[in-house]
Picture 1 (cartoon, rainbow, N blue to C red):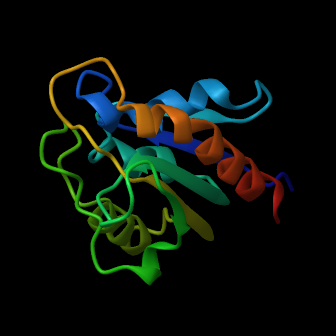
Picture 2 (picture 1 turned 180 degrees about the vertical axis):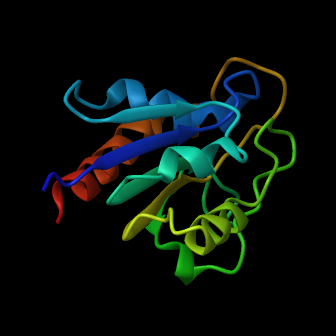
Length: 147
């Protein structure tokens, strides 16, 4: 049986740092199963079905330092409501909860988050987030490689 792993990038590339979850996919090797969900939302529910492990990359305001990278499991937080300016303006944890109720939640789910600085209409990243994207990619690859 094949272990089906996917890295899911979420974010609006037209809203500054919010696009970091999508942009980091470009830094991952070609052999990684990458799913771009620029608008995220309920579309995430369908992408989770059939996966054994999901690594969700997103810009999340967790009150960290600008550009800080954190990896956590959904059960470790109460809410990771996205910032409100994004097209995926829905609490990812609610989608994961629904996936679990429907029997579509992967056995292993991680959220690889980066602390945004600027969420406004722009295709540019803040210097802090731009500089931290390689660290986000590195953390994601560690998660991809672990059983």
